[in-house]
Structure formats: C-alpha cells, structure tokens
Amino acid sequence: MRGWGAAMRELYTFFRSSTSYRLRIALAWKGLDYTAHYVSLPKMEHRTEEYRRLNPQRLVPLLVDGERRVIQSMATIEYLDEAYPEPPLLPRTIDGRAYVRAVSQMIGCDIHPLNNVRVLKRLQSQFGADEAATKSWYAHWVAEGLGSLESYVAVSGMSGAFCCGDAVTMADICLVPQIFNAQRFDCPLAPYPTLMAIFDRCMRLDAFTATQPSGQPDAF
Ligand SMILES: N[C@@H](CCC(=O)N[C@@H](CS)C(=O)NCC(=O)O)C(=O)O
Image (tube, rainbow, N blue to C red; front, side):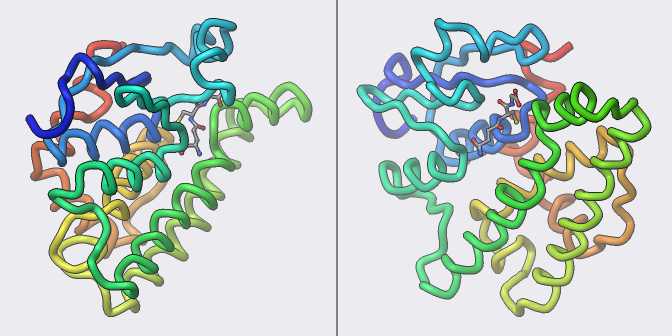
C-alpha cells in the first residue's frame, strides 16, 4: 500500500453508483487502501442530515483522505493523481490531458447527469413518466452520448488499447462504469465497437473487475 494509512482514508460509496465505481477503480489502480462506508441510495441515506454534514451536495461518492474531504468524482480522481502520482491517471502531455479530460467530461458532464437517479425520479413525479418512458429517456441520452464518444475516440488518433494510447487513464475509469449503467438499462452497445473493445480490455484488469458493482459488500 502506498500513501497514508488505510485508517485515514474513507470512501462513501453505493455499489450501483457509477461515480462511486469510478473512485473504487482509481483507488484500486493506485493501490490505495480505504475503509468503505455504504450509503444506500434507495434508502435515501444520502439525504440524511448526518450525511449532509459530510457532503453538503448529498451525493455519492465522497472521499475522506486524512484531513481532506473531496467530492465530485472527476475532481477526486485528479486530486488522487496529484496526491499519489504513481501510476498516473492523466497523460504527461498537454494534448493527452486535454483529450482525457474531454472524454471523461463527455461521460461525466453530458451523459451521466441526464440519467441520474434524481433526474429520473423527477421525470416521474413532475411529468408522470412511466417505466417505459423513463427507460426510453435513459436510452436516448446513452445513444446520443456514446454515439458522439465512439466517433470522437475512433477518429482522435489518440486511442490504443485504451481510450488514450496503451495506458489506463481517467477516461477509461469514466467509460467502464457508464457501460455498466447502459447494460443495466438494456441499451444496445453494438454501435460502439471502439468503446466496447476498450471496455473488454479494461475488464481484464483487476482494478476494474474487483471493484465492479456486483462484487461489492452492499450489492443486492
Ligand atoms: N458529478 C458528480 C455526480 C455524483 C452523483 O450524481 N452521484 C449519484 C450516484 S452515481 C448520486 O448520488 N445520486 C443520488 C441522487 O441522484 O439522488 C460526481 O461525479 O461525483
């Protein structure tokens, strides 16, 4: 184990949360141990006063690293990369970093927020969307987002075994959980051969498989 003692690092996580999965992968990739706290989204544990005191945004994940509390999964991955640089999750070159951040944000800013739990719930409570309508909304934004991402990664000239060359980066850490989400909602994935080839390669690595949703102690 590198870095600070395991007792000083804590992750607030929910097994099915793709943003939590991002951090589980990043921590595993860097060999950083932590104590997990399981926050059930269906039980609304993230909306309790107790959790709000830890994370005013009332979302998972939350990383506590010693004296630091870090929220927002992509900001947290960048934080981990600065605090524990090896192995790196951002490329050394300015072009590589711009590309990895762009891929990550296409997922983290333009796909995931539209399909988040509270957005789907709001569609149902405010507009009366039933399960079929909710699923169709979900599939629409996945198709729109992954379609653009497939084209971008395929023509970028930057990809290799992984999104950026042959090294795992934050981009792959954002991609894999998003594919898990798409699979859970039965979204067709055949139109994204480049992304799925990268996904398959990631899923041969321990950091991605050992941290996947179904293997988490809070999975049901
Ligand atoms: N941009 C934030 C998003 C965090 C987020 O939305 N987490 C979801 C789980 S994947 C959540 O806590 N959802 C609870 C809700 O929507 O009420 C991040 O990347 O950390």
